[in-house]
Structure formats: structure tokens, C-alpha cells
Length: 301
Image (cartoon, rainbow, N blue to C red):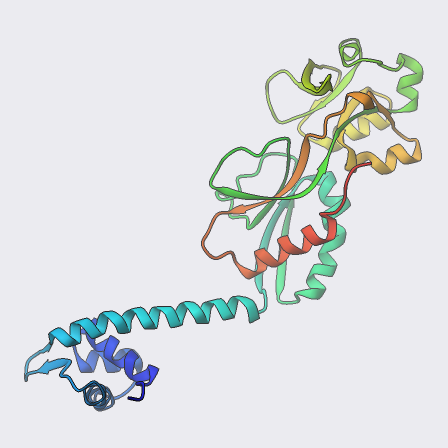
């Protein structure tokens, strides 16, 4: 026995869902006679009456009810298959709303955006640069770049981009005027430039004998912006703490001196964070895959 066409199954399913040939025809934009003919052909193929027709209403037979369950399931499977193929072959498009930290974004993400747009010309990007906490879902962002020692449990998904130790450093001028701390505890007698959005006392964590060791720090400048601490450190206003990848060029050039290196912890990571959903938008998946491929291999020295 040959198999019925998908179109005839769609017509049968539409009749079952709408309750009439006319309503099914309107849904599928065909004539009622075409629907009636398709149902008759199905019944002939199957050798069973599927719908009991009267002048006033349609009633599905037991065979018709059973067959509809199979048809509805088969059509759903075909639709899922089509969506799966589309997710592979379709081109990413639409507006991508991105939020990222200021310094990391300028150094690592911004230079990649032109190349991403060149590769995916149907995507547009709206970028917000901020060191403050961003509500991804509440503010409607597709992707947020975040640095964190540990990502908290949430309804969001975080994909790691890179790892880095948190590095304490100061300018040669500050060290010349105030000396070089040899132990984390000595930071208590130094001017420290705190960059944090938390209103509580700032703590910098180090590694001593394999265990975390927290030191409370304070100083003349406190800001939510890493850039403020960075400019203060360059100007000799105090000691600051940064993800190593942010200040690596300045350390290598001698503008900043890396301090307490033997006490550093490989604790901070940078993540691409996005909402948990069944089907991730192609534009979002393409962007995350792109930045992970481009900078995911970066490791601190």
C-alpha cells in the first residue's frame, strides 16, 4: 500500500482540529471539495471509514480517532525535523543586544565585532559597555559578558571564555615612594584602589599554602569602574587588583609592576552568559561560538 501524501494528512488533521471541512479548507487555503476528496482518498487507502458525515456535523469513527493520534504525532515529528534542518542551514540574522565590561570589552570584544559582522552580515549588534551589574533578562539582552570567580546558580547559562588570575599591581612611582609589599597582610598599610559594585568592605583573596586567604583593603579611591582603578594605579595613587589579561600589556611595558605574584590564585573567569531556552537564537549561538573560538584559548602567563 502506497503512503498518503503529507498534504492529505495535513487536511485530515485540520478537519479533526477545526471540526468541519469548510474550516479546514479556510485554514489551509484550499477548497472544501479538495479537503473532502483528500479524506475520501485516505479512507480508500486505509479501507476504513474515518469520519461519519451527516448533513449537520462530522463525527470521527473509532478508527478515525485512532488514526488522527498517529497523524498528529507524525506531523509534529516532521515539523521538528524541518526546524532542526533550518537551525543548521539558516543564516543568523536580527538585532543582537550585548552588554560587556568596559575594559575587557574594549580590549577583547570590540576588535572582534567588525569581523563578526563581516562573517554574518545579516546581524546587527547593539552594545552596552558597563562595569555595573546588568540584568540580562530584565533589560532584554541576548548575551552579557561577565567576569566572576564563581558563577552563581541561576536560570542563566554561562559559557567560559577565558580564565585568569587576579593580579595586584602598582606603578613604579608608587613602589618607589611607598615600597613593595612582600606579603598580602602588608596591603593593610598601603593605599589600595578598590573597584567593586559591592557596598561592603572590600576583600582581596590570595593563595597561602593552597588555601584562600582574604585581606580587607581600603584606600583613597573606590569605584564601580575598573577603568577608574586602572587610571589611578597608572598615576601612582595606589595598588590595584585586576584580571591579569586586562593589564598584561602594561606589565610587559613596565607601566605597572606585578606584585605578590606567588600568592595569586587562578580564580577568575570570563563568561558569556545567556538565558536558558529550548532553542537558542542563531544570532546568539553564532556570536558566542565566535568569541569563544577567537579568545577562548587565551591564558594568563
